[in-house]
Structures are given as structure tokens and as C-alpha cells.
Image (cartoon, rainbow, N blue to C red; front, side, top):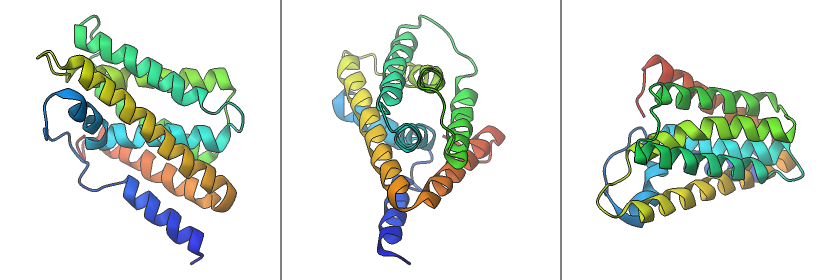
Length: 196
């Protein structure tokens, strides 16, 4: 195996921790809890990495606008969920569906026009944010928790973008592999074979 392939395989395995199949309550409030939250659920983790990966791999110019749209809509969704402004009863199903869509876009190497890419990412981000928002602590630490969650989301996008840029230059097969793993995880969540 080529050394670059080995490095990318190790990176992929590091981004897909087997322990991240649930949202265990390691901590319940504050900045650290907010940072940890997106990392502790395979649904959020894979979606955020996939958005960064797909945007960097398919949009050479201004790729960062897609993750920015995701983070912005995630924040809106989180605030709506936290304050109870809206109710999104199918949010978990749509979060799982986002994995299928983002994974499929990676597998196909599909490039969308920038406004459409931002709309797809932002639309699904509302549901991811809503799910985070309803889990936010209500003990006066919500703002710090939210800041940590947004920062972790941006870092996951960045990590995905680095992997996507590397894959474009050195290992295009890696995008198909990552996309397949992401889409299959989404299907398994929808089918109820695993839980987030």
C-alpha cells in the first residue's frame, strides 16, 4: 500500500470511532460539554465531516461557504430548539437522511452549484441544530455550551475539508469509501439497526 494511502486510512479510521454510537452524558454543561457533544454522536460527527469533505472535494473555489451555511443554520436550529420556538418531530429521521445524502454526494463526486450546495447543507443543518438545541443545558451554561458546539462543528468541517483536499490530490477512492461509510451509517440509523 502506498504511504499516502496508509496515512489516509488511519485518518479515516480516526474520524470514525466505534465508541461514538451514542450521546453518552460525559458532562452536562459548559464549554467542554458543548465541544464534546458533536463528537459523541455518530450521526452528527459523520455529517459534519462529510460536509467539509464534500465541499472541499467538489467546490475548488469558495468551498468554505458550504460549511459556513451549515454552521449558520445549525446555530439557528439550535436556538430554535433551545427556546422551543418550533417543533421538528422528524428531526432524527432527517438527520439520518442527511448522512445518506452527504454520503451519496461524496460517492458520486457530485458538484452542485454553490447556492444549491449551501441550501442542501443549510437545510439539513437546521435539523442537526434543533437536535442539539433541545439537549442544551438549561442551568445558565447554555451560551458556553452553544459556543463549544459551534466551534466543534467548525473544526469537524475543517477536518473533513483537509481530508477531502488530500483525497482529491492523492486518493480519489477515499472519497468514495468515506461516502459509502457515511451513507450506510445513515441507512442503518433509519432502519433502526444502530442508534445515535
